[in-house]
Amino acid sequence: MNINWHDLLTALALVLIIEGLLPFTIPDKVKEVYRSLQEAPSNSLRTMGLASILAGLVLLYIV
Image (tube, rainbow, N blue to C red; front, side, top):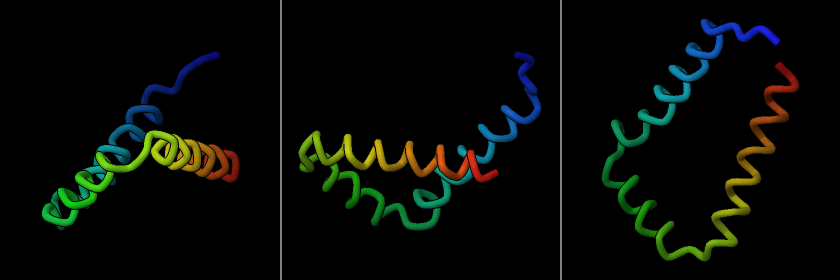
């Protein structure tokens, strides 16, 4: 299996850009969300993480 490093680094760069958009544009709301995440039960966070992984896999399959 040959890794295309250009595509991998492009994908990583896009993730970093997207992850930085909300803290840059609405930092106060992001702080509020982080506080509420601290109070959320671990099972809820795991469920959200699993849903995110599955959505990413479906999107990757479609692309």
